[in-house]
Amino acid sequence: MRVFIYHIINDIYSNVRKEIIMIVITGATGKAGSQIANLLLEKGEEIRVVGRSEERLNPFKEKGAEIALGDQGDTTFLTGAFSNADIVYLLLPPKMDTDNVRAYYNCMGDVAVSAIEQSGIQKVVFLSSLGAELESGTGPVLGLHDVEEKIKALQDVDIAVLRPG
Image (tube, rainbow, N blue to C red; front, side):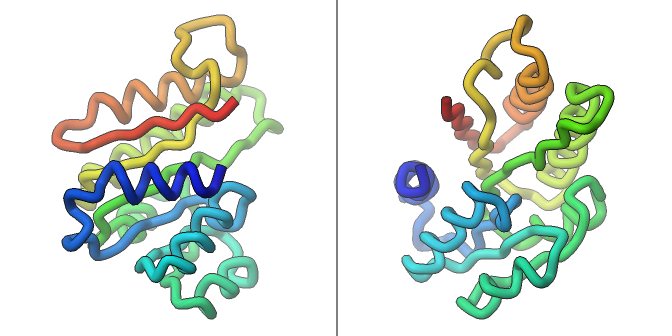
């Protein structure tokens, strides 16, 4: 999956390749995010990794990444993390221990959309889920469906939605 996502980020936006300043990777300490971050660093890309644990982000810093340490549910923090960047790889951290997963994803999606708008990000690669294209019958995935719709409604933002299965 890491090579596929790298190609999405690299190939879809190859027309702005020389203008890319920074790629922001959310969920950088997780399985998918860490693989993408490491691959981009290996390719010499400038990246900023977002996460809550400085200890877990430091290996990326040692390889040349900027780190943004904070809570992805905080609009002010996330807007700052997205500032002066061109592309965001957006992964919403799962939280299955909540009473209302859909409401959680909607809240996190609202924060992400606000941060995208306020920071001026124009390109987003959103890691969603298989089934998020459906409006009903998918349980917790409905929250990701809602977030996809919010992201797709952004004006003047190029969107790539990934739905691994």
